Amino acid sequence: MEIVEVGPRDGLQNERTLLSTEVKVEYITRALAAGVRRIEAVAFAHPARVPQLADAEAVLDAIPRRADVSYIGLVLNRRGLDRALASAGVDEVNYVLVATDEFSQRNQGMTTARSLAQWDEVAAGARAAGLRTTLTVAAAFGCPFTGEVAADHVASLIARAAVAPDEICLADTIGAGVPRQVAALVTAVREAAPDVALRAHFHNTRNTGYANALAALDHGVSALDASIGGIGGCPFAPAATGNIATEDLAYLLARSGIESGVRLDGLAATGTWIAERLGITAPAMLGRAGNFPA
Amino acid sequence: MEIVEVGPRDGLQNERTLLSTEVKVEYITRALAAGVRRIEAVAFAHPARVPQLADAEAVLDAIPRRADVSYIGLVLNRRGLDRALASAGVDEVNYVLVATDEFSQRNQGMTTARSLAQWDEVAAGARAAGLRTTLTVAAAFGCPFTGEVAADHVASLIARAAVAPDEICLADTIGAGVPRQVAALVTAVREAAPDVALRAHFHNTRNTGYANALAALDHGVSALDASIGGIGGCPFAPAATGNIATEDLAYLLARSGIESGVRLDGLAATGTWIAERLGITAPAMLGRAGNFPA
Image (tube, rainbow over all chains, first blue to last red; front, side):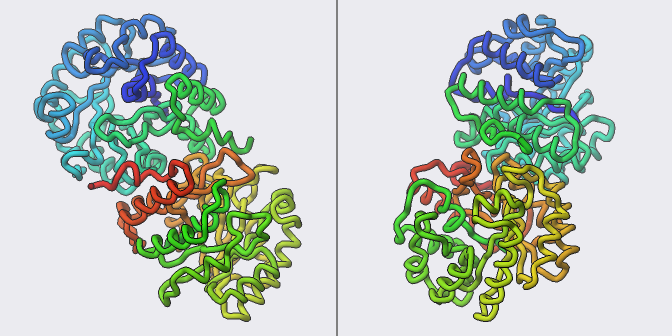
C-alpha cells in the first residue's frame, strides 16, 4: 500500500507556528529520504486565509524534482488550479469537497452543490494539463456542525461528479469515525465509483485513527494519508489532534507484514525534528517509544 | 463485552504523583457512577516497592460494597494473597506471570518457571477462599529486554499451569503488539485452554492499542482492561504511555454498536479529573475532543 505524506500541507496548515520555506523544504526532503514517494507538498489557498502555506511556489521551486516522486498541490478553485499549472512543480491536484452544506459554507464559502460544480471545472482543467486528480470528500465520517453524515450521501455526491477523479479520498476531518463506519462508507463509495482508486484520510482525534486505517486497507483502500510527527489538527475542532502519524502508521503496517516502502527510523527522527520546529510535542509515539524489536 | 477498569492499579502504579486514599476512593467511586462494574482496585505489593499503592487495605475499607460490583486485587505471591484474604473486600485476585525470564527476574525476582509454580499455590489458596482468579501473562506481545515473544511460548506457559485460572489475561505490557499478533496469540492460547475466558490488556505506547482492542473482541476475547484517563505507563519503558483509556475505548465500542454498559460523559469527566490530580495531561482524548455526535 501507499502512504501519502500530508504533513507539509494538512499538518502545517493547522499549526500556529509559521515555518520558513527552508524548514518546509527540509521537512519534505527528509520525508523523501525516509522513503515516502507521494507528498501533498503545498496548498494554493489565499495567503491571507492560510498564512502557514503562503509560500507554495517558493516551496515547489526548492524541493527536489525526481521521476519517482509525485507532488500533490491542494487546489480550492479555478484560481488555485491556475497557480498549480503555472508552478510546473505539481504532479497531482487534490480538490476538497466538504460533505455538508454547513461545513462547506464555513470552510469554502459555498454550498456542497456549488463546490461539486466547481470540481468539474477544476478537474477538467487539471486533466487537460496532464495532472492526476484526487477528489477528497471532507467530513465524510461526520460534521462538526450537523453531526452524522450518511454513507449514502457521500456516495451520491461522488456519483454526481461529472468528471470522474483518478482517485477518491474519504476524509475523517474531525476524527469521529470507527472501523465499522469505514467498512460501510468504502462499500457505498465503491458501488458509486467502481473503477476509481480509493484513498483514506484519518485524524486521531478520539484515538480511532489507526484502527480506521487498518480497516480501510482491509476493505481495499490503496493509499492512506498521514503526517510525519502526527502534526496538524482542525481549526473547526480546536481540541482535535492531527492526522494519524506517518511513523506510527508505518510501525503498524510493518509489524502487520504490509509493505509500504518507508523507513521507520527516518520517519521517527523527522517527527521529533518537525515538532521541535513547531514548538510542540509530537502526537506521534514512535519517536518517544522507539521501534520494537529495538 | 466487559470493561475492566485498571486505572486505580496499573494506572496509578506508574505515575510519579502519590495520591491520597481519599482521591483513590473517589476515582473508584466515579468509575462506578459511570457504569464500570469490574475494577482492579488495589495491589498487594510491598509498600516500599510500590509506594503509589501502599494503602490497599485502606482503599478497600472505604470503597462502596455492592453486589453488582467485582473488585480485583493484584497479588504477587503468597504473602499478597494472605493480605487479600484478610482484607475481605476483594472478589477476585489477579496474578501476573511475566512471559520471559529476563523481565520476570527484574520485575519479580524469579524465573518464569518459579513464578508459574507460585501461581499454582496462590490460585489454590484463592479458590479455596471462594475468590475468582485471573492469570495475566505480562509481556505476552514482546519483551523490553529480549524482544519477540512467540505465541506458542505463551500458550505453553498456560498449558503448564497446574491450577486452571477462571480467566486468562493477555497483556501487551510495553505496547508493541498489532492486530495480526492479537489474532495469532488469542488463537494459540485458546487451543491451550479452550474452556477459560479470555481478557486482554493493551498499552497505547505505539498507537496500536485501540486497533488491538477491537481485534481481541473480533477473536472472542470477552473482557478488556483500560484505565480512565489513559493514565499509567511502564517503569521499564519510560517513554511509554499508559493503558488504553477507558473513555476512548468506550467511544470506539459505542460507535461500533458494541454494548459495554458505561457512560461516556462520566468516564471522560473522570479522566480529566484524575489527570488534574496527577498533574498530567490525560493521554485520553475524549475529554478534550468531546463526544460525537455532540
